[in-house]
Amino acid sequence: MADASEVHLPSWHRDHPKRGCKGVPAFGRYRNEANSTFVLLTRVVPRATTRPLPGGGFFILDRGGTQVKERLYELKQEAFRRIDEAKDVKALNDVRVAYLGKKGPITEVLRGMGALPPEERPKLGALANEVRAAIQQALEAKQAKLEQEEVERKLAAEAIDVTLPGRPVSLGNPHPLTRVIEEIEDLFIGMGYTVAEGPEVETDYYNFEALNLPKGHPARDMQDSFYITEEILLRTHTSPMQARTMEKHRGRGPVKIICPGKVYRRDTDDATHSHQFTQIEGLVVDRNIRMSDLKGTLREFARKLFGEGRDIRFRPSFFPFTEPSVEVDVSCFRCEGRGCGVCKGTGWIEILGAGMVHPNVLEMAGFDSKTYTGFAFGMGPERIAMLKYGIDDIRHFYQNDLRFLRQFLRV
Image (tube, rainbow, N blue to C red; front, side):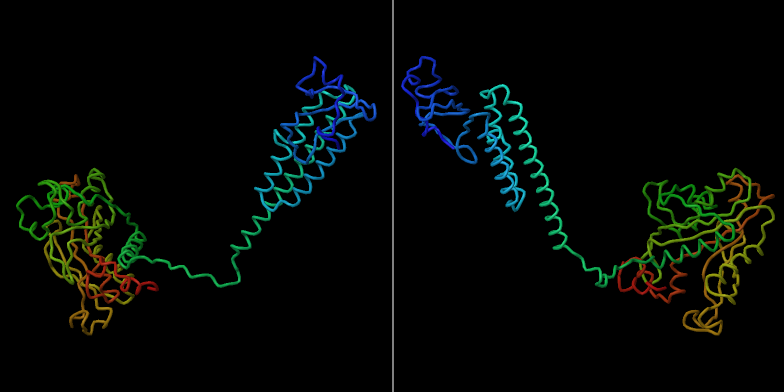
């Protein structure tokens, strides 16, 4: 294919007053002195600024644009070859810019269509578009292939051998206190009780006064707590929920609840005492509730929790909110009542306190004490867990020592 340096311009053309630039027109016809054939230059630049196009050479059309067709086919094959040789997306993008970019050879051909005879333009334009579309399609197919290969490489590099045994996942387990609390809740829910929970920051009225402990009562000394103000404190027991629940019933029974939760007392921490611990209290209020109902309930509780064959006994005691009041012992489940270190040789283990609800507590909550009676009880899950699992120090429950907690994985 000829380039601008091979074109000889006759003297009549060089001196023509309408030439497009000095010596060489941008577009025009001239008579080749060698063969008298009309030739159309689609792009001719001065010698000083000659720049080969991608693929090489200039475009010269003659006799129906045969050389343009050939050049388009050459560009197509060159593009296919370079696309096939591209090893990654970056190289492929370079091919895209070189052949389909604004300064690419196909764009240059389309810009030169104006110099073609009118009857040739549609055919060569359609051919140029077909070549562009074919290159574009090949680029997309190659890009998809490269992306798929990249995915496959990553999958191969990150492959997981599913035949290998999996790494064991360390699972947690419920805290021993949580186990005991949930077990007690399940026992009483099975007896028809509902669970009532309330605030840990309580008023002096519900924590003491509504439970027959007026200001200045000496029994308050046993439950010295953490005060926020003179009337606001951290509750010393879950009994306030009994008073709150009875108030909601507006003097109409029945009431049958258990109240689990954390409580606080100003105490010195040691093996059997803690400034924070848990408590579960129970309350039943209805017509004709008797002491025998309390004993039957607690005996069933003891047998379900510590094993069949357990028995309980009542010992007289005092609590301001119950009258009469009792301490409840369960027969030792270690020695079967013969005497051992757990029961200190007595054959009995103290587990909770209980009694019949004091008439003053019923009246302050809006119940007629001549019509309604009730019983209440309270227990510490820590003490029950210590007895059940043989734990000798209450502080183990709150120190988060894994050596201690892991002993209960299979309990």
